[in-house]
Image (cartoon, rainbow, N blue to C red; front, side):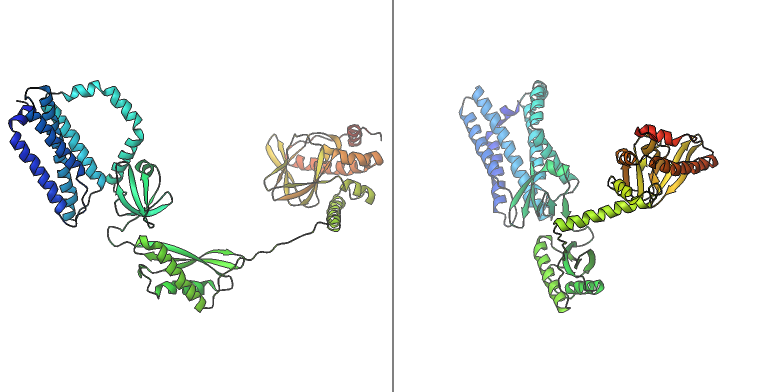
Length: 500
C-alpha cells in the first residue's frame, strides 16, 4: 500500500490531523502580545487540501482523478503543517524563551522542510526523485543562471545572519542611509529611518560594500561617540575654549548623552580669523543622534557666550590691481631693470657698453628650474647659455673613472656659453641643487650684437678661454681629460658666419 492508498484508507484520521493543524493555527492567532506572521498561506493550503481530499473520496477510488486529488491533498496538508509548526517555533516558543530569530531563518527553515518533505513525498508516491533531477539538469542550470542576482541576494542574507554582522534592531549607516534594521529577508534588508521611511537594500550590495553598525558591546551598554564643530575667534585662548566646551556638556543634563565616558574637545583646524574646535561626546541611543547634536550645540553656544568668546568669522584679503598703461609701463620697467642687472653681473658681458648690454637684455627669457632638475646634459646640443640669477647648481663631468664634480654655480654665474658661441655639444651636466632662477640667451640674440660689433667675439673669447683653462686644470686634478684648446675666435666666427 503506497501513501495515496493509505490516504484513502485512513481518510477520517486525515481529517482529524487537518483539524489539529487548524486548531494550532487558531491557538497561535489567539496568543496575545506575540509578534507572529500571518497564517494566510497555511489556511489556504488547508482549504485546498480539504477540497482535494473530499473530491478524491467522492470520486471513483480507482480513477486517475481520485489518485491525483488525494496526492495533492496529502502534499498540501503537509505544507500547511510545516507552515503552522514553523510559526509556533519562531513566533511563539523562541520569543517566549527570550530568543528572536531573523525572518530569513524562518523562511529558510520552511523552505528546507518543504523541499525535504517534497522529496520524501515523491519517494512514497512511487516517483524516483533522481530521475527528475537527471531529466531537468539543463533546465535547472538555465534557471540558476537567470536567477543569479536573486541567488546572490539570498546567499548574502544567509551569510549576514550566519556571521552575525547584521541583526534586526541594529542601527546602521549604509549607502547614505541611517536607520534601524527592521527585517532581513530573502532578497533584501529593510532599514527604517528616523523619518519612518522603509529603505530596501539588496543583500548582495551589503556583501560587496562597507557599512557601519552601531551595536552595544558584549560586556556593557552602548556608547557611541559623536562630534560637533564650532568656529571660535582666533583671539580666544585654545586651552580656555576647550575647557568651556567640555564643561558645557559635563555640567549639563542632556537627554541620552552619557556622563561616562566624559566629553572631550580638541583644536581641529586653524584659519584666517578663526579656529575650529571639535567637541566629542558619547551617546547612549543612536536614534536620537540629531536631537542630541542639537542640544549639545545649544549648551556649547550658551557656554561660549557666558565666557565672552565669540564665534569666528573667516577673514579674506583681496588685492585689486588696475592694469592700466601706467601700471604696465612700471611692470615692464621693473622687468627690464632685472634683465639688465643680470647682464651687468655676468663676467662675459660686464665689460660691454651700456647700449650693447641693453640689446642683450632684450633677448633674455626667464628659465626657472626646480631642485633636482637636470638643467643641461653632457653631450646635448643647445645653442644658448644660462645666466644664474638665484640658486645653486652642480657642474658634473662623466669620465672614465665615473662622474666628477667640476664646480658649483651660484648667483651671477653663467654656463652653456660654448654651446651658444660655437654650437658644440655640452661639455658637462648641470643639476640644480636648489630651486634655480635663470635667464636664457640664445644664438639669435647674440648674433645681433656680433653683426653690429664683431670684435666683441675676441673680447668674449678671451674670457671664455680663461674659464676653459681653469676647467681643464680641475679636470686634470680629478683624473679626467678635457677637450684641449684651439682657436676659439675662429670657431665663433665660423659658427656665426662673420669675418674678423
